[in-house]
Image 1: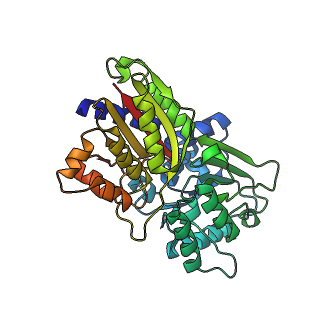
Image 2: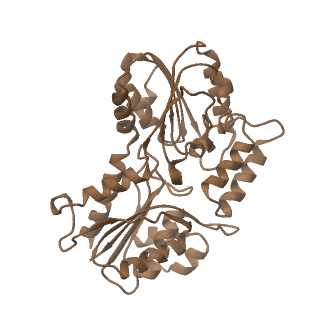
Image 3: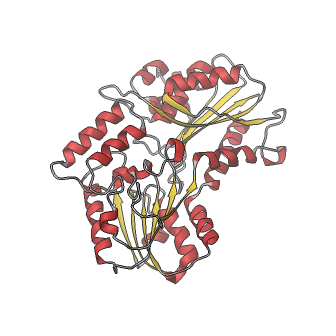
Length: 386
């Protein structure tokens, strides 16, 4: 059984490596072939890795930088950079540090020369991490609006639309502070459809100028393709007797428990193989939710439906290394998950109802912990049928 878990984790790791922020930025800059001096602004949960990619390519031509990322997502290597201002902020709920980060962003732009070329490195999480509010809005109002939408299981597009409506920098409004400076923007997509106006609530989108150079350099699709490639032959980790790996065309959205049931039913009715899904599901939270996130909720719901099959295995994890407000990326489950958790006197259905899947999955020994991954391309689901 441990061997099958290792296979799932190996496939997951291959996907993360393919969309790592440092490598993605470096590759994108190499393709452009330009090393003109510039100033870098990296914002998001993958900002640290993305900035490292810029440093690796530009060297001394990176004249200065501003890094805004989630607490505990700054590497020692980045913290040691003398020409980079580092700000740690709050996610998924904005707080005072988010407003401080927004002011720091405006101050940084104001002190740069008017014609200074800018390299923006944007990844998911920017919506919460940096904010400048429209007149009449307060931090409490922003927090309440965000918390209500998250609790209602609203999709990221709806949450970011709200954020754009009350922000002085989202929805392309940051251009009023950027001015006429030349801008290159590299993005890691954490939204369905890879719409740049939704990534980070669209700091630079819609764009007001035709010569704006931008590119999405990493996406969920790229991660899934790398995962499929990693298990394309036995020497790359495919389990014996499993002859196929399939990227499923359906992107999983909506209620996490319902999507989990759909995945297990598909595995049960399919030929042996590995099946990969991209996902961005939601969870309707109770008044006092327990520990967990959408991937842990998905995994526990899947474990309930796996019974009694002994030949089904599933991994559900975020590509950013976090799930909800927890430091766990997700979980891997099989038909022994419920037994192991119940042995610790926990009720899986009660934990699911109370949005407390993390407590059960910790007890069953099925949580996945990676730490910050240097990327953020939504979630991945890996199903294995023997």
